[in-house]
Amino acid sequence: DAGITQSPRHKVTETGTPVTLRCHQTENHRYMYWYRQDPGHGLRLIHYSYGVKDTDKGEVSDGYSVSRSKTEDFLLTLESATSSQTSVYFCAISGGPYEQYFGPGTRLTVT
Amino acid sequence: AQSVTQLDSQVPVFEEAPVELRCNYSSSVSVYLFWYVQYPNQGLQLLLKYLSGSTLVKGINGFEAEFNKSQTSFHLRKPSVHISDTAESFCAVSEYGGSQGNLIFGKGTKLSVKP
Image 1 (cartoon, rainbow over the protein chains, first blue to last red):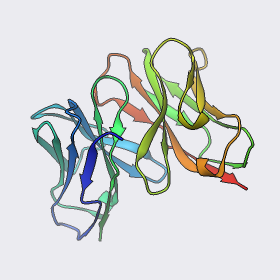
Image 2: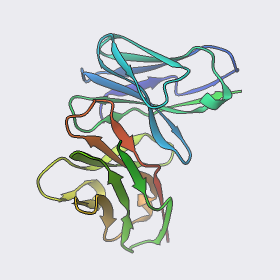
Image 3: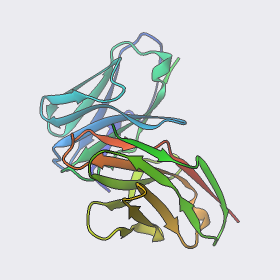
Image 4: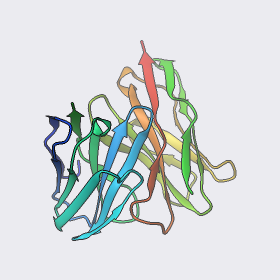
């Protein structure tokens, strides 16, 4: 398995609170991604990074921000969580223009 | 713009029967194609990929897929399924030479293998 960890694995938070999810890799891959998975929608890209401090928006970026200050860490922040952001969040990494490798996921519930 | 359509949201099948999960895509340029599998309460695992060359690709756990450019399809097949194949599978596409974030997923097909 690719060396990807996500923390926390489960989180319950209240509407309006800030939340930060962390993705950590030990593969030294250049590219990192954040997706959300919702029933009936498959996986949708939130943000991605193509290097330290280089990030770009994906399909569903509204309400989310990211940061990458080190190659190994990619943080996803919900500035003010809403119930519509209840989802399972997956981090992925890639060393090139081919397949991506996924972390175990974080289940976030916003009450 | 690219899109991926998985034609069946659920596929029930009996153990040891063959199965096909259908995937069609649309793109104006050449593509790379992937199938990922997600077992219950787990992350996504790469089953197989088509990058170039032979249109029949073999993956893990006895799965294979065939790239058909004229029909823009990449159907996943297994000749004989096991209970342990029960999972949700996702077809995905990325453009050749495209943005590194541009991996588009289908909405998934749940394979349910019954004894």
